[in-house]
Amino acid sequence: MAILEILKFPDARLRKKGVAIKKVTPELQTLAADMLETMYSFRGIGLAAAQVDKQVRLIVLDTRPRENGRYKPEQMTELEAAAVQPLIIFNPVIVKKEGKTTYDEGCLSVPTYFETVERFNWIEFSGLNLQGAPFTLQTDGLLAICIQHEIDHLDGKLFIDRLSPVKSMRLKSKIKKFGYPDPSHPDSEEELDAESEREEHRL
Ligand SMILES: [Zn+2]
Image (cartoon, rainbow, N blue to C red; front, side):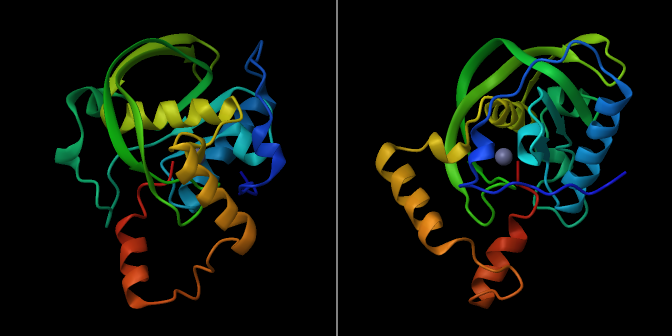
């Protein structure tokens, strides 16, 4: 197992599209395990292969509440709680979607920024599991939001592309100009608090 480097916006490699896999090989199983380890080490709840510079359609997720997280077990929906996590999904495809919801999304590839994004509230998706067996799952809540966010990564899309054009442009210019704040040198106690409250929400 290994902790992989996570690409950060505006790295052009984040814009590459992932290719559907034909077969789950031992190499891809290792990649999935490394991605999970990487995701946990950065306290993320989802990670897409595109974020670690692999152009394959693979996402890993674990939205279960963790110790000290703001997200509590009672905040999980029934469908979300029923899903066996962590989830490793090759070739994920959303086959049905319903309703709308919004959430303050963050991303390991756009660290320290959180913005409200609209997503489908309920989805049915299909894909292949770690053993290469096809499966289908219906879910909602944070898990459904996270899956939509991760599938976007496989298409070269980031959550900051889903903001209003003006907001999106401003945020991107700001990051390109100033980079990301150094987490080891928070500007104020207040920022540190805000950051720790949100640590479970990086998708
Ligand atoms: Zn992300």
